[in-house]
Image (cartoon, rainbow, N blue to C red; front, side, top):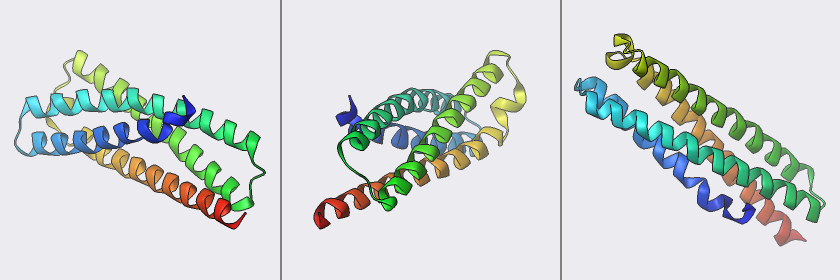
Length: 147
């Protein structure tokens, strides 16, 4: 499953980004359907983020067993893994909080800017995690080119 990490990571990135677009659009135009689609996309983003994190942790542990890592690669691994785990937990917390608000029919959750703003912040964290993953890939490639 570790070899599928590059495949899995693109789903939460795309789903969270598109969810933000639907959330912001739904808030601006006051469309419940768009906000509901945003919620579904965030939930799917959370599920796919779990797969991405699980496969990434497997890939990392397998790679560390095979190769004596340089400090640069170790630092890149640690930064990417930490940010990835934080992001996954925040996505899941957002989905749980939003699910609660929807089930309890909270009007502030269905018409305000709270979830779009949180979603934008989450999208920034997802992008940052992806950039750290790209840096990790470049560091690994550089290591193998030099050795």
